[in-house]
Image 1 (cartoon, helix red, strand yellow):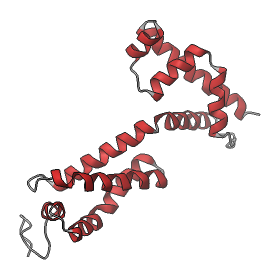
Image 2 (image 1 turned 30 degrees about the horizontal axis):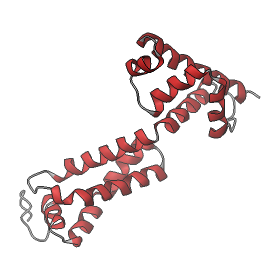
Image 3 (image 1 turned 180 degrees about the vertical axis):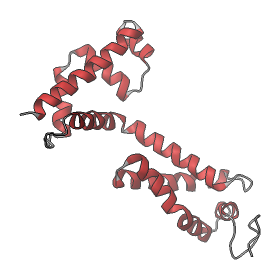
Image 4 (image 1 turned 90 degrees about the horizontal axis):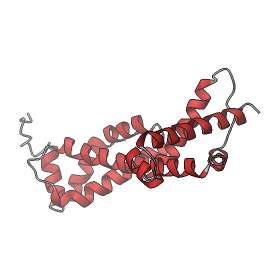
Length: 187
């Protein structure tokens, strides 16, 4: 019978396995990987809804785990530790792909507002081309907000306007893109 401390050598705890892996035991990693791969992949897939993206982040999680193995302390609960790595890898991925994902959300919202119409097949490249229809200030506001993750106060400072106006610029630009995409979708 395994005791709660996980002292059974036949069934070492996650913490013991991670400590062994940190000490250079590759078999310990294999056991940890097999124990938790489905849970981690399930978590990522539930957040991203895309298998390829989830697998990309999943690989990053285990690369980060490998890189951080020397910093692991056996008294640290393994599962919360590895899920902190997972959440950080997911956050990094989302920041890196924020503009693309936001644009996809705009397209999805557009399609969902007219469920009676079939999907238009509007390509993402076409949607990005519509950015050219915005004025220079709107494009800059969108770039600052979605590419650089700037706050409205930072956008206002860069564009020499008020925070309220910066918020309005971004909102109007997104609304205009939705209208353009809706109009193209009706053709």
